[in-house]
Image (cartoon, rainbow, N blue to C red; front, side, top):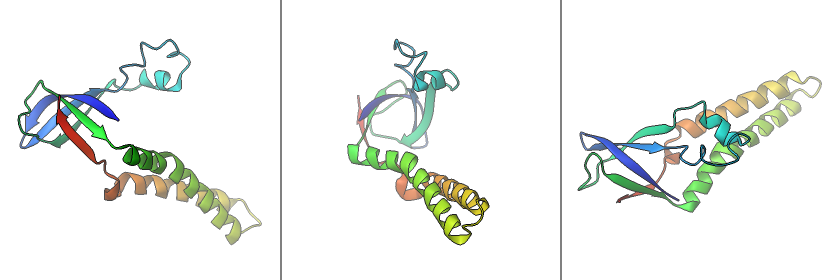
Length: 135
């Protein structure tokens, strides 16, 4: 998967990149009924983040970032499937711990879900591996 980003600033060996996340959402005919189109109306249309500076890149240039399909799939799994599996695992542990009440099932399921989200957010090995190319 490739996406073009605009270099909006260069600071101390770091380039600040901006991308328009919802570039297709407003032009699509299904935007009024699509979940992504509806959510795009509530958030800023552009995203800004930093990447290490590449040689020959200056403000106003466009840089193409590419992410491998394997990395994209593993990140999607960790973001969408892993927290749900942790929710079910926590609920199962709660059911095994105290089968007579649902309090532990709900509580441990919620704790498992939140722990999985925090793990996905803060685990350093889940950072994106991208390839930078000047467009």
